Length: 262
Image (cartoon, rainbow, N blue to C red):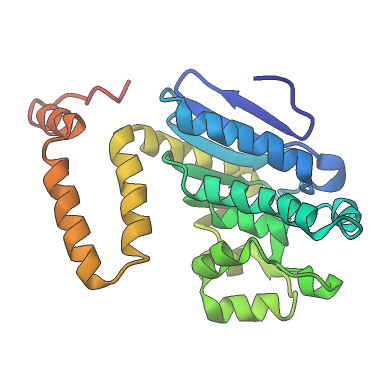
């Protein structure tokens, strides 16, 4: 892919992709260019079958301070139709990360504020540093955490969301774990090892099965018991005929690694 100005992107020989926010001078604040560049690489992750997992992280000491305030200030004078188009960029990026058919592992290398919490919330697994802090700061600036709200409220629940949205208070990594925002927090010098442990476990799983599991979680969490009864029975009936299921069961019985494990 071409050169980027706000992100870095790489894929290693195992199929582990890394999307790194790369505006450390402004604490990786997000703007329209970042949205466009990041969405392009998420699209590649979706379409490239050799990519097995995406690690989302950032350069420097911060993960993401939210939306770039100068960028947001520039939107005020634009027509409403253009503001909607620009606002949609973050909404689309979050949705595309959330629905990516490959696991997304957040390497949360530092503090995250405002829109940065939206990025944490769409990670399937989010690992942060013990000394990181988090806050939903929009109300202190007369703003609204609009596009991140569906994902953050889903992640931490309404009671915690009310407290954070309506006070702007900072929370520690330990509190973020308690709320469910982070999966786990570790000392900074353990961050890479902790992320690698999760990546290694993902790479032992069948790619098609992982994609189906993500769809399963999304469906059963948004439907009632009657719909879920039909959906889950249908999916398991389909599963028994999967090539991956045949290979997985056969490899287990033959006491060997399945084809997707190198």
